[in-house]
Length: 359
Ligand SMILES: Cc1ncc(COP(=O)(O)O)c(C=O)c1O
Image (cartoon, rainbow, N blue to C red; front, side, top):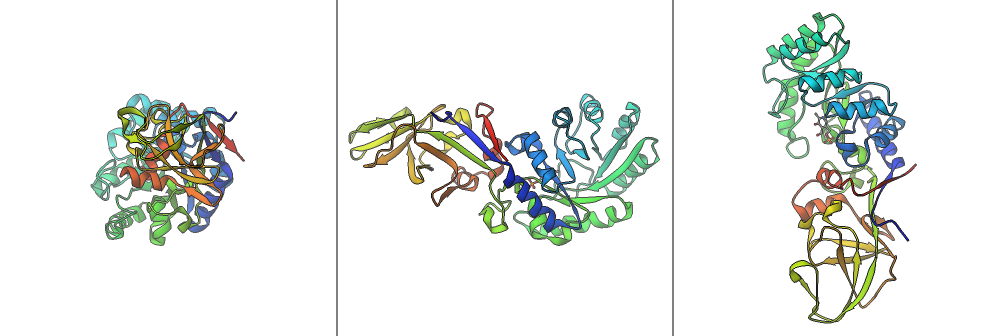
């Protein structure tokens, strides 16, 4: 019997996506972003595959994410991109990770730890999140890093707010970033996946790609447009098939009432696994390569597919995300149905779903 629910990760796809991004970005180097458990794919496995594909840097958001990679024996340049409390700073430095600074007090806190570290200075050119908006302050921070014994000025960075949908604003951010970063003479990095794919001028010395590493489209359309291969398939199986007469219902609230006699299949996966309840009435599954509508309310542990006049055997594989028999359902399809982005789809696959890996 198949497992109840399984997120199958194709590490070869991650490797090939990275090789593609590295080739696009060259001579800039590739930093693979593996935060949030590798966008739901598994941070360690994704990191190893990304390195095999040519990533020379890895980036995470939190100190504990850095610790997890190091504890698993992952070496090489590693950047913690997020804000760090004093406790987290300690953890990030102990992991031998580079950290991001934009205030002189933070640099002093790093110095006070007495541990050598690479520091990347962040200019906020329009994201309005982390970093300083003031190039003079950013320059003072860089000078403080350079002057401090043990610290290394390892990079100058910014982050784009609209690389996926407003190239003009991205260009304005780049124009603010470049004069400041060029003057520092260190590794310059700004581009996320969308900027890497769309704007050669944004690639600079290093690109920081996340979503494209996993084969999802940073522009929310079709990953194949950019030669990217989705790395994650979400698979369950048909646990029950029942004949349902016209007028009978399925699921909470009786939101599905059969209009005609039909066969219904129960698939034991639900919002407890990350199949969001908001998908109710808006998605399909592939049963034996056949596209079948999911009907009724998504429950915590089950969904129901309407098979019409063609029942399938109990045990039939149910592909919620992935490709079978010439049909394909991608995270972008779910994102569209939910009014969200593909990032949230794979990050939202819950820890209850085991991840399995194919080389
Ligand atoms: C600072 C920073 N750089 C790079 C990335 C990677 O972005 P993307 O997944 O769009 O490639 C992220 C992710 O949100 C980020 O926060």
